[in-house]
Image (cartoon, rainbow, N blue to C red; front, top):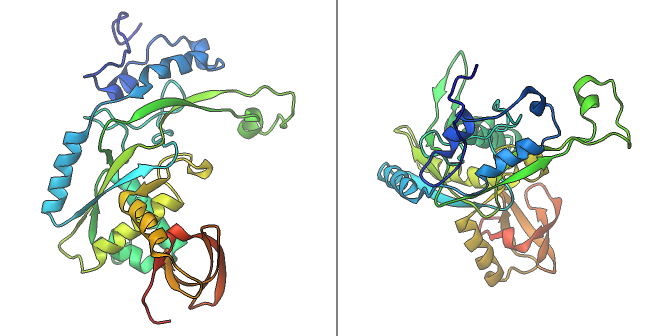
Length: 308
């Protein structure tokens, strides 16, 4: 018995919600296919490859809403593949997160907030500032954050394609009984991903209790987190890295500025001094801690006029 008519189809065409089709119309799946090598799953995922829906009008409405509440909006472009929602249950083993009404890939606000909070707390070591911006989940004194994070949505059509995970020691990872060996066959597992160069709109609004620098700091932390730890799934292998449009301009201006040895600069909130220059890179040292930070791309340094 099937819950839907047998003549249902899962074709992805313009005007249809791809997320609805992906989640509700997984058809023609005999039990043996679920445990197969994955070709049939890959063929089904290929229906979702290619350009999706144009979300420019929706992105513009969200931008107007945020700016009218004194918030800030900035576009970020992926510097590599991006995927999200792989942990969601699905017939092809790896799910994908679609916007419920638009039918396009997106990053929910809760995921963005968690990513930025983790960056501030663990990488920057500033749990106090993280609590001020994003709230404190404490039984004694719970507080609401000073900023509101919005969903990140594409500003225009993004293109999907099928990626492959190829575990070479699946049995060992699952049950620990079959040691990894050269003669074992890998098991290709397909999943959907967004192609490099996709542009997403990120937005942050201040709450009524926000202070002067809260919005600015939140966006600065967001930029750093998106570039250094990434968003979505599989960030450990380079997925989900973003670069802001303003940062692209900063890179160009940094080259034009022409920093020299002995100049002071900012490097991701660290005050540094340039001790050597070579091939577009600068060897820098932390001013306050007198600790060497190695060679950094000159384009990532920003002139600093603070007291040394």
